[in-house]
Length: 261
Ligand SMILES: [Zn+2]
Image (cartoon, rainbow, N blue to C red; front, top):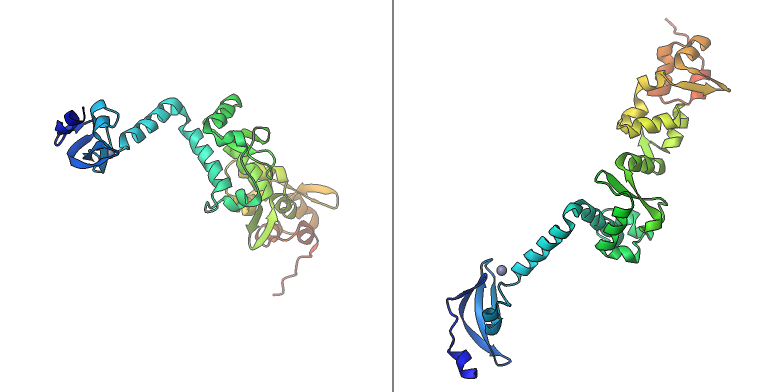
């Protein structure tokens, strides 16, 4: 038996992706062969594994098959898998750019979702669609079934903007504070931003204010109406509020300077 194995010379033969280059030293009294894989990598293989077809590559083949099997099984879920990876990056990878807002603040992922399959199952049973993104209902809460839902990008942007501070013309305020400061309806401002109106423009677009009512001393009317009532030219009033960003009170109560000619 032992003799017979030694008589076999695999040199030059091909097994799967492996081409045998020559004999290596025996290992645990097994005959070992040095092979070169189609991918270019060298590997030392037990002769019996070559003969039985147990080893067909340096390892690259099984890695490829694993990926293919994954794709076949989860084919439609490439996006879902990317979302799952993103979530893990934010919570667990301290080098991730978003870590400070997630893992760094103690946000974590429930144990069940450690496995992609569980996360996938939850997603498919909870209204996941290709156009939706995952959102935590409580921003301080974890990624877990009770705290997550699938929402549109628009809704997510909206939620984020409500919580973040917006810096405009060197001043930082929340969206609600900006709306108040500018004398515009917060929900209108929010809607415009959600409709894809650039933030910068939404805060400074002059036409925007023309159609909105300014409330002062319990009275709500358009800039044009205020202009008529106060005898301040519409252009001047508009400039005070939009360009100079005065408060409504200041804009409506500061007398117009008489021009000296
Ligand atoms: Zn290989």
